[in-house]
Length: 306
Image 1 (spheres, rainbow, N blue to C red):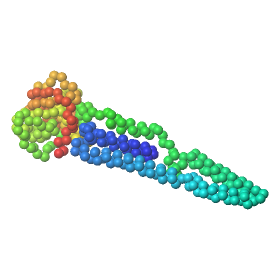
Image 2: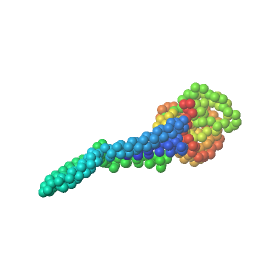
Image 3: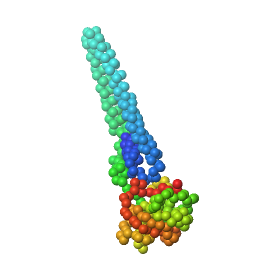
Image 4: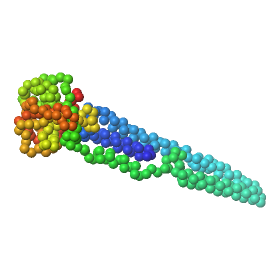
């Protein structure tokens, strides 16, 4: 791929990164804290693309100015003027005109020889694709521009966040917390799903103090039809996202669709089960009410490693 194509691809990548960074699209790929780095990376890529174009234009102009054909023509012009003047002088001085005619014939022969040599050199250069002396005449296959399609897909199509399909095929990533902070005032209290799961599984609900808890997550169903509320825990990017699950019991809505986002309110229950994938603990929540909610701005939960 030549430099022009490289610059175009770099520019498109930088534009795609900036587009994802200034919107919420980047949250489908990485955690929110990486936004400044994405903005900086997008700017660097665009500046690099523009610098590549500028460098290529400068090199092309320099190569055009330094072509041997241009120097030969420039040097030959004064020589022709000197020959013309000399031929006219000799023609007037020679009574028989032989000297002038001989000089003119010699000059015409030299001009024809120079022109033939230049045409041969130009034809040889063009036929081999090295006209500018830098080997830029080779043509790359047009199929290489298909590399741009994934970039256009990134800009035009927003991929969905990981959902129930991925969650039920991976084991729970719940880990024992280092400690339990005091719950804020008010009832019900809003907690993150990972926070509640850690308190319910490893503290047996003692730090919950019998409070009503409000949690948001998406619905997932196992093969037996047991409903779970899930959040994908994010360490760095979507590639390492792992599910944290809590089971739902009590007043569960009669119809639940996978990947539907719910805001559920309920209390701690000692019921728990083991994840069939990795044997991890899955605590339950005794639901008292539930309502559907829109997909949140950031669908991933980053609290598990903070």
